[in-house]
Every structure is written in structure tokens, then in C-alpha cells.
Amino acid sequence: MATFDSCNPARPAEVVATFPVQGGGDVDAAVAVAADAQRAWAAVPVPERAEIIGQCAVVLAQRKSELSRLVAREAGKVLVEAGGDVQEAIDMARFVAGQGRAAWGETVPSELRDKLAWTTRQPIGVVGLITPWNFPVAIPAWKVFPALLAGNGIVLKPSEHAPACAAAFVTACAEAGLPRGLLQAVYGYADPAVVLAVHQGVGALSFTGSVPTGRAVAVAAMEHGPKVVSLELGGKNAMIVRDDADLDLVVDGAIFGAFGTAGQRCTSTSRLVVHPAIADELIDRIVGRAQTLRLGDPLDPSTDVGPVITAASAERIVGAVEVAVGEGAGLACGGRLRRDVPGCDQGSFVEPTVLTGVKPASRVAREEVFGPVLAVLEVEDLDEAIAVVNSVEYGLSASIYTRDVNRALHAVDRIDAGIVYVNAPTIGAEISLPFGGTRHTGNGFREAGQRGIEQFSQLKSVYIDYSGRLQRAQIDNRAPVTGEA
Image (cartoon, rainbow, N blue to C red; front, side, top):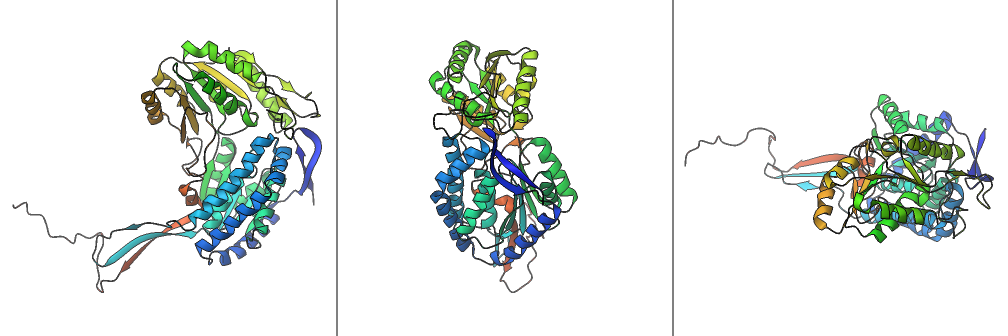
């Protein structure tokens, strides 16, 4: 069988692990094994499923250090961010385990006498999960644990850039006591993902990735039979900064939001919509901080910004900066592709970049760059700033910095995004609230929170009539209203 290497993006010659290039037959086998295991799993009481998921949290916590180092090596995330990635998986397992004793539906009063009405949830069967490389442990956890609690079998297709992290996650779940065969993983490039998307044995598909790929996956899935398809796609997230904002707080947020994970998050802060009265000072301060950020090996605790995942990605990012400058933006700092970072032979790094004088219609203000690039737009009026935030095709995350609670709540009401922050950057979602966006960011489903299980279960409405006689719902059973006093 053909194989492929997963490599350290900081040192591409360093092989992290080797995996088989799998195809349609492998997906068929994985679905069959997961389906067989799922039939027994569906009969397990929900609280008991939750206990096993809780044990997954224990094993992941025990392995946090080694998993964090693996995330740093394979995904290029600096150690503190890699640790956060693993911690999210731990927290998600704990949260989902807690939901095992929460409400599993709702009861409603019946319109008829001696009748009960409620909803419950049932598993879908086998669900397919297609996950990206940038949160190689957290995102699988966000999908896997709710799907397990709902009683499903799972086939996971991780990114070819982070298969070792996914394999380690699957192993940890198995060691925690997850029944054999219930969680399967298939590896390779596009082929297994395509087969998984259209497989007749897969009842639900959850995809996180780019907009073009997500659309293609959704169309293919729906053309090959009824499926629940949930998409979590791109973002073009903006931070509004008003003239009364705490600039120290803004600078901290912009640096973390724009340049954390080398800008390779769907929630990264890519636009700064700033009031002209404070723009010059704010830009100077952000540029000053950005130029002190240290590029380097993600395993080195002193590194601030790690590599871009591939050389092709780095070249695309730098190309987007060049296009922006060609459209009239000013290059305040960065913009260069670096392959000379000490200790990182041939790793592809992009310097933290700040572009000024960006216009709302420019490409860099509208298209996802997915790199450490912050585009600064100057807008005086708050409603105009909100309109700029809402003018792109994405609606994942946005924020506003102001000391005025009225301005803050005005923006919260009018920003069209799934997540809105006040006095914080556009990253930092917590697992207890739903995660997802509007417009082309997704298709309406949400991950995490109590809503996270919805994409992996089917609602069933139940009616029990204990009256002992025929009662007709949706029939006019009442005497006519005469209008008499």
C-alpha cells in the first residue's frame, strides 16, 4: 500500500509519522466496523455512555504534555497554543459527559385531555467527520464526543497534515474504554473524504474546512442520499475599535487575535476597523509589538509565532499581501516569507504583517487570508463600521472595543456573526456556548454547548393517549364562539 509522511512544518525534512494512503475500500471497511459496533453502543444507557466519555477526559489529561508536543511538532502551533488545543479536547469530554445526565428532550402540554407529549433523541447510526489540521485534537473532540453521547458510530478523516494527532486522540479514547470499532479513522488525501461524504452507510457528515471544499462536500453528500450535513467554514473576522477604547487592551487583543497560530485560525482577527482619531497611535503600537514577535521552533517556549503549515500556504499568504499593496494598501510591517529561521531548516514562516489604508472593497478586506496578516480600515461612524464588518460573505466572529456600554450593546445587536466579543479579540470561544457562524461561514448548525449534539442525533416526538377513547388532534373540537356576552 502507498504511504505518505506527516512532516514537521518547522523542519519539513523531519518525518513525524508515516500513514497509509487509504481509499474507497478502506472507507467501506471502516463504516462496516463502526456500524457493527454502533448497534451495541446505541443500547447502552446515555449516562453510561457519558461515563466512558468522562474517562476519555481523564486519559487525555494524563497525556496532555506528550499530546501538546505532538501538536507543536505536527501542526506548528507554539507550545502554549498546542496545550490549549489539547485542553479544549479535555474540557469538551468533561462537558459532554455532564450532558449525559441532562435533559434529553422536552415535554409540552397536550391540547387534549389525558395525553402526554414529549421529544427524545435517537442516534443517526454512523457519522462521518472530516477535520482540519489547525486544531488537530480539539476539533475532532468537538465532533466525536457529542456524536458518541448521541449513540453513534464514527468514521474520522483527519487532515493529511495532522494524522498523527488524530491517531493519538483515537488511541486515547480506546484506552479510556471506548468499545472496539466504534471510533474508526481513515487516512490519506482527498479520496477517503470524498468516499465518506457520499457513502450510503453514513447518515450524517460534519465538515470543518474551507468554503469551496465545504460546498463541494455538501453537494456531493446530498446528491447521494439523505444526510444531515453540517459545515463549519471560513471567517473574515473584524475588530471594531472606537475612540474611547483602552488601547493597551486593544494592542494585546490585536496581537493575539491576528498573529496567534500564525493567523491560521478560522476565528483569527484579520480586519481592524478603527476610528481615525486613534488610528495612527494604535497602528504604531501594534507594529511595534508585531516586530518584536519571535519566529521559531514551536517546541521552544520562547517562540511567539510558528511556521505556516506548508510552503504553498506561505507563498499564497505573501501573494495576498502583494496584491493588497498593489491595490493601494500600505505595508507597515512584515509581508515577507522567511525560510532562514534558526533551527528551522526550510520551514516556511510569514512575518506578522500589518496593512494600512485598506479599503472595504479590496480583496484583503474581503477574502480569507488564513495567515498572520492584519488589514487596518479607518471608519469614523459606528454604524458604518458595523456595515463594514457585515459587508463580507462570512459571519463567524467579530468584536468591539469601547468603554461605552451603549455602543457595545448597539454593536452586539447589529453585527451579523455567530460570535461577538466585547473588549476581547475575535478568538477565544468557550465550549459551553455554541460555536458557529452565519452566511457562508456555515449552514446553520452549531458545535459545542448544548446545541452541539443536534447535528448527530434525530428528534423523535412521542404522544401517549391514556384516555381510552379516540381523540382527534388538529381537529376543531371546540364549540363555536357566538360572540354573546
